[in-house]
Length: 155
Image 1 (tube, one colour):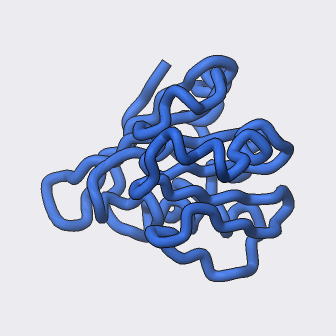
Image 2 (spheres, one colour):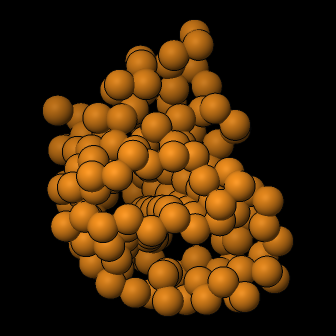
Image 3 (cartoon, helix red, strand yellow):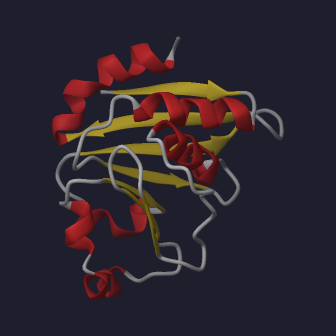
């Protein structure tokens, strides 16, 4: 199952992330895709806030992994400049298959390394400079969680 939401501002994109955090469980992984500046990091900042992360989350473009403490450990990957074969050197399995929440920006670059169950969100530009289209797709066990997520985020 998949569904689409529209965001009309960075604040709304942030709020979608913050709301989604309430549904996250240990071991969840979210793959974010979309053009540069499409809202992936803004959404991730909302997730972090919703998870109770106190630190200011920054765009990890030159840092591959950032770790934060919240109600669950929160791991923020940016694999834009990474080759898939370099991922193993980082011990990604400890994050992807651990007890924290993992967000991977540019997850499409390492799709074959992602677990069988994950949420993917694709960000595309809308009609104006602030509008974004977010397409949510569930993979594996995430398919069974999509209805609840759509209801929560559509409120």
